[in-house]
Length: 245
Image 1 (cartoon, rainbow, N blue to C red):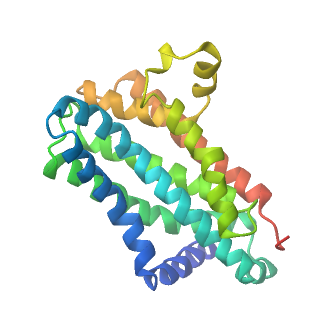
Image 2: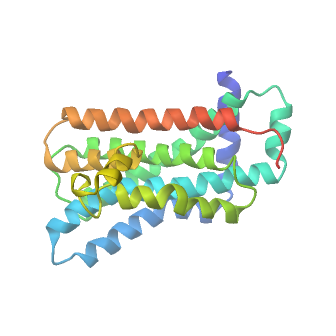
């Protein structure tokens, strides 16, 4: 792995994204607009908004970063750019980390904007620090980036990328505890939810909502989400192909 090559890859990806305002708008504005919409949906029930809003503050960045990262990386592959890069003295780890760094920069802005709007504009009620809320939201966005990089290795078209949503994202949303507490689910479903990273992303948000500091459960959730992101990035590097099938 070469740091200069990794940063060069990240700069190239950021330059390309800067010429795509629609993608940037999707990344930055969609989670915020969805949170605002949710605020008005539960206008008469602030307690429900606080609970669901905190959870979705972690889910929305994960989903949007997954979509944008997977599609953008797939375009690199189908256009031949990825193959030309791999023909150069550029390691797979340099390439994957460069992409992760570039989209990670966008994730910082996305998570910061969404958290800022939720806390200071929508006045979401949390007991813990907003910085802890921002930290777990950022990790969720980075996890979405890692999942998007991983999935792009197995898709040949953008339509196939979208088809991965029901397979990888929707089950996590259904089983993460957003709709029903995980400990009230059927034992099999609870066991499945216990190995899905989004479950710990939602649990981390709930810990900040209820407790004033970084509890042991919060630290556990952070470690699991961060570890999952690193594991998926490693798998993405291992499955990176030189040629498009």
